[in-house]
Structures are given as structure tokens and as C-alpha cells.
Image 1 (cartoon, rainbow, N blue to C red):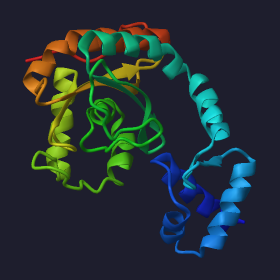
Image 2 (image 1 turned 180 degrees about the horizontal axis):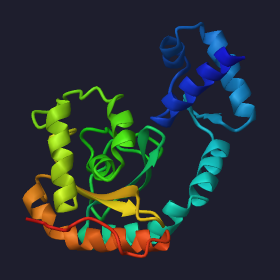
Image 3 (image 1 turned 180 degrees about the vertical axis):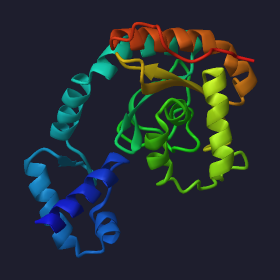
Length: 256
């Protein structure tokens, strides 16, 4: 049973990234096509996957519905969504909302601004801990023991020439984030993207999540993107207050 569940999870993850052919799924699972087909047919009966006209397989509407119901039930996403949409319209760039979930920092919402280019991030996927602005904004506000537990699982993989690849350098980066009240991603995961991010706090004033603005460097490089920090701080403060924060604790804001 556990093997079937594992295989079903792999299939769902693959189909979530785009329609897949039966042969591709069989190769990814390293099993015979008939084994995959039986799994797909079972999952199709439960509306977890669906077969398209070109004979590829995609995520089913039943799973999409369950995911949306789950997301709509999350206080953070419910509180933030209208404000994320407003900011996306105002700045024209992509807005991300991420939340700490165990030792992962997961994107829980994403709104693309007018004319924004689609990017690889997706709702429900973990943010790269050592590169994503929202991840840095969250990590910088955590208690040391919880932060260390997350960083212990981080490989510091190099993605671009700007990627921070050492724990010592990353610790210094988080110190800067705490001092200035915001984090950046200066082409550290994808060299053509820049990002600014700030923390979101819960009712106790603890860092609960992070929100960011991401733009193409060709349109708005990091130095120019920083001009939106007042809007981003205002947005994070509004979401935090909706979550019960009274605004009496926080970090210093300094855009210089």
C-alpha cells in the first residue's frame, strides 16, 4: 500500500508541473506502463487526475477543488489575498506570500501583476531557503533554534553568480535583514529576477510569514525596486494586524 501511495504522490507532483504522457510517468517511476495505468485509472475515478484529449494526464478537478478549499480556509491567505491583488495592480509586478510550515517555507499565494512574466514559483511549492527574499525575511525573524533547524537541511546550492553558498555569509545576510527590516533576492535563484521582501507577524508579534515583490531586472532592477518598500511594509502591517498583531513589536525599517 505504501508503495502505491508513494507512486501516486510522484504522479501528482509530476502532473502538477504540466500534462504528462503515460510513458514519461512510467520512466520517472521506473515501472511498467501497465502499473502506472492502473494507478492513473484509480486516481481518475477519484477525480485526482484526468486524461486529456491528446492522451496525456493532468491534475484532476477534484484535487484542484480540494486544494482551493484548503487554501481558502487558511486565515493568512484569506486576509492577504485582496491586498496582494491591490499591490500587484499598483506596482505591476508579481507578489508572493509565503508561510513557514515545519522546516519548509512554502508559497501560499501568488498574484501576477499586469504584464508580469510568469515565473517558476508555484503555490504549494517550497521557496529556496537561501535565495528567496520571502525565505530570508522569515528566517531573519525566527528564534535561533528554529532558524538553525531549517538551515541544517539547506544545501546552499549555487544557482547563479549571486547565490550565497556559505552558512557564514548567509548568517551575515540575515543580520542585514534584521537591521534594515527587509530582505532581497538580487538574481540569486534566477539571474534575471530581483525581489524585495518583508516579514508578516502573527498575533504575538512573532514572524508568521513573508510577502515580496518580484520583477524582471530588465524592467525594474533591485535598486529601483526598493522604491516600493513603503508600500510593501504597509501591506505586511495590514496583513499582520488582520492576524491579530497590535503593531507594538517589529523591526527597524531602513531602505538605505
